[in-house]
Amino acid sequence: MSDLPASVLFVCSLNSIRSPMAEAILKSLHGRRIFVQSAGVRRGELDPLAVEVMDELGLDLARHRPKTLEELEDGFFDLVVTLSPEAHHRALEMTRESACEVEFWRIPDPSLVEGSREQRLAAYRAVRDLLLRRIRERFPPAPVPAS
Image (cartoon, rainbow, N blue to C red; front, side):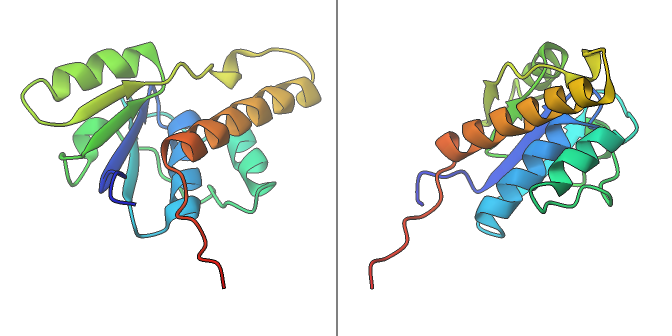
């Protein structure tokens, strides 16, 4: 657990799909052991398909309120994970003079997928599952002690 950051910020373009998904997943895996927030470069509206696919995992996004980087109460994080090129460029500017690490995860924007409702939901599920894998790899849960 000692190599886990104490605080993590997930940033995407609008804080409406990818970054709130990542925030909810990391919180579900580590609870209060890691302080986790998410933000966007610009303010968006919470995407109902993101809420739906996270609900399938038992994670509630319905109360998430999208916010911008400027609206964060605490601007210092040990790690900033950016989920879009726009967010990555902004995070590098924002953290230029801090000791914060910045990681770029290339996560596709599922809202760009066109097609039937099922095809769109499949794209959102694929992003959710990709985030889940990446987060489990980067922030592994503590091993359960043998009894």
